[in-house]
Every structure is written in structure tokens, then in C-alpha cells.
Image (cartoon, rainbow, N blue to C red; front, side, top):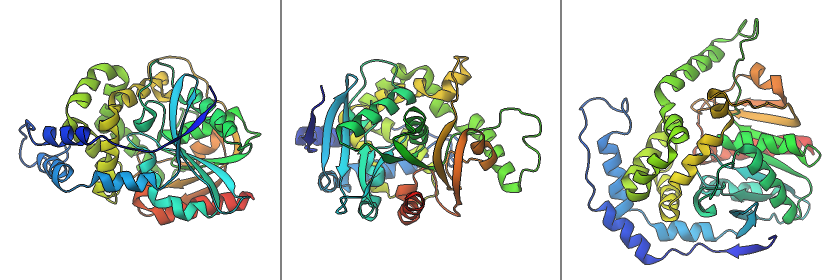
Length: 370
């Protein structure tokens, strides 16, 4: 099945009424005063977001904004794939495949579409099992399978050679596309990249203060924030019931991540748009299943996996509050790093937080390759 069909987001009013009704009868938990974010999203913060979601947020405006861009769906390897395909006015523009991470969607890139389309034909899919791609129906949708699906998608769109860009888990998927088809991928840009020390002799010698802080953050992440991944990778089905039945459960889970993995620059309405997409498509549980497929989970549980070297030219933009805070010497071990940009502000959702800086980095890197 190779057909690519136009798609338009059209939400039934009954679904919005149901969401609003649920938001109006929340059973709130208690909390210990004075803890702030130490135990997770504070009650006052979630109440404020939920009240805005119910009475101040305009989903129809968000829906219209998404629909201003050409969208399509197709089926690849038995899975529905939704994507934006925004063509540049320049017929010779480089195709650029952008992959989001968790808990995200193409909404993350709405603010950079216009500046980037001057130089690129943009292809921005929803990950399998996430949002408008709908739930997955089987296991196995790890980074390699998704990368293969992305290569098939670009073939169907007539893009023989193209660049790839990714954030969060999207960096790994983008990297995999380059590993699988280096003759097609002209370069890879990531805001962040997954890399870490492997215990080799002397690899920690001469680290700068900033690099040591990044290693320390990795340790604190594993002890304080890794619960997101452990729960979703170990018991995603049990986790899914609360996400499917309670919009506030979903909202609080996402709000915690957007707070802890960002630099405070995410527009609350962008967060609510992403939460609404996951709620309407009932894919928070399906997206959680993808955590059982990620490479570091496989490593943690003892399943053998091989890190294959990536040869395509790669540039990394490092944002200080990103959950991925790479150290260049570790990234260079298995990647062809030709560019490295350190930013003073920003986090995991760079296209939302620092759209101008994000777009400038992407444009500069791929321009240098051409």
C-alpha cells in the first residue's frame, strides 16, 4: 500500500465537549506544602494549566494553524504515518526530514516552518504510535524500524537525497537513517545527541568544568528523572489506563517533562496543543510503549545491540537545559562530527523555546554542506 492521501485535522465537537466536561470534575490529590517541583508537578501549577485548558485555551485556533500546512497520511510497514509536507518556493531546495521526540509532535516545529521553508522542502512526521499517526498495533517500532519507514516515506515523496534533523529520541532515529542509507542522507543535525562514556582508560581525563557538570547532570537524571522512562519502558500498559481516562493525568505527566527538560521558554498553549493531540488520539499509552524499544533500554536490560558508526556529516546544537547534554569527545567516538554549537539558553524543545536560534543553526549547517 503506497498511496499518500491528503489529511486535514477535523475534531468532532463532541470530543471537545467530553474533554471539557472531564476537566470540570477532576478529583485532585493532596500535596505536602513547600516541596515545589521536588516530587513532580505542583498542584497549583497543574490546576492553573487545567483551568486554562478548560476555559482559556482555543483548540479550534490551534487546529486551524496546523491545517494551514499541507498534511498527509500513508501506510508503511503496516503502520499509519501522518506527516506535514511543506514545500519551498525554491524547486531546488534541499528536502529536510525532521523527527520529534517524546512527548512531542510536529507542533514543536510550527514556529520554524516559515523560516526554514525558504531553504528546505520540509517533511515533519508524527512518530509511529504518537498523536496523529495513531497507535501502533505491535511491538518492534524501535529506532531502526522507524528509520527504515522514514527512508520509504522519502522515497514515496520523490526525495532521493535529503538532510535529517532530530531532537530528543528523534536524534537517534535521524542518526539511524544516516547509518542505513549514507548515500541518501547528506547530513544530520541534532539538537542534542545520545552519547556517554564507556569506561575506556583515560576518557575522563582533561574534561572541562562544563563537561563535568554534564556528567554530573547525567547522574542526577538517572536518579531523579529517569522514572519517566522506567515506568513507560517496564509497564507501559498499566501506565496507559490513567493516560486514557484522565486528561489531567496526561497533562501533569507532560507538564513535568516540559518544565524539567526546558529552560522555561515553552508557550503553555503549545504544550496544551500537544496534550490535546495525544488526548484526542488516545496515544499517550502507545507512545509510552516506544520506550521499550529505545537503545539505552535494551542496553539496560541486557539485550545485545550494536552501535554502528555514523559516517554522514553531523552537526550538534547543544542547549544547556536539554535532557541530552552531550560531550563532544564522546559524540565524536561514533559520529562524523563536523559542527558543534553551544548555546547559552534553551532546552530539549529547542524549536519551541529558541526558534530563531534553532532555524539559524539548521540553515547554517546544511548551507555549509551545499
